Image 1: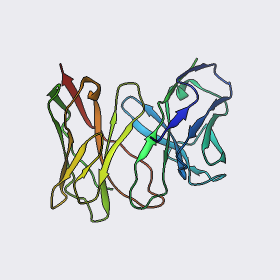
Image 2: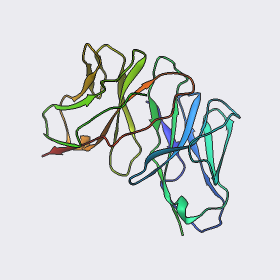
Image 3: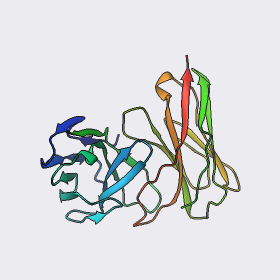
Image 4: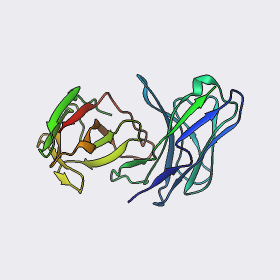
Length: 114
Length: 112
């Protein structure tokens, strides 16, 4: 089974802190993603990566950065956490499969910024 | 990507088959149909996908009509753990188009 593992299930951080969210996948997927999910707003893409050291901005990259030094690991960084970044963060991965493979998600990290 | 229409909510008795419909009348020839679900407070879970043929895996079956304008996800023997929001998505499988956009989905409640 594909496994996408996020380092924390729940996290509470203070305003202004630098926050690292880690994600690891074990299926050798090329693509990795970071989304956030908020009530009424659905899934919103923050950043994604097609390959090691590659990154592309999604729809809402402001206030975030990412790092992909190894194929299996994709980190999301909140440079200076703010209360409007309180959200559920979801990491996902997929094959670079033009035959239409599925996208697999981690269990989510519920981040609260106080 | 084509738009999809799903009922807002459905109930199904435990042990019965749950049949979740999805309309995608504007689907184009190279677009796949995907199904995901999200159980409360968890990440979305991929269920199944197909292009034109019916598909079955250990979780569910996907029936796509011949004209591809609608599909049905079938959970053959629903359990309480299948209570979730189910999302039907239609999209082209192509490099650069991997982003997922979920609509409002169908809230499926399995009744004991």
